[in-house]
View 1 (cartoon, rainbow, N blue to C red):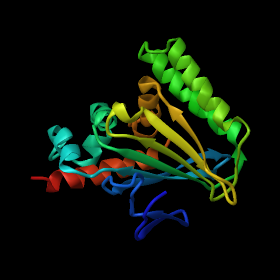
View 2: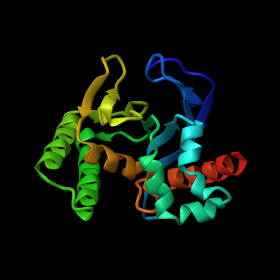
View 3: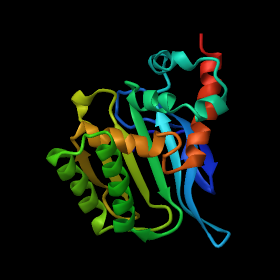
Length: 220
């Protein structure tokens, strides 16, 4: 995926502190991390470890300047902050590493349901969106997620470069990739991971709030 530097460990899984996804583009910084999990009969089951990478630049901090001076708890409870983060015109990358093996179809259905529900709620679920969501579900349908396998979501800074790219890396095989051309669908995928309270990973959202409270406090 390009150059990688020192690492941050999440649930025993190393995440590079920086990733250069596209040759010639600035490195993306690991700004937050977390896990997806569920609790069954008081037993925590961890599914994925997550790293959120952004082009941590003046453009990003200027975009979020209205929240300068806010505490992490204040950011955590402010849906408008997370909406602004999704809309920030900077390159983003979500690196999702499998902890517990599941069928790819299970992950695809969960992603499909979440994205579709968000689109319906925003009154943006039309034929084009339906087709794009089904394409994503089909991409994951025949795959099997084993520990250490990596799902990557890449979002260019501008839609001119395409709305998003999803890739799936498995041991000993070529990386499988697909493009998401529909901007509404790409934005709702971002909201699934960055969307504040209804996001898929509360620990990742907490990590985002902690990091941006510090970054914005230190910004000029």
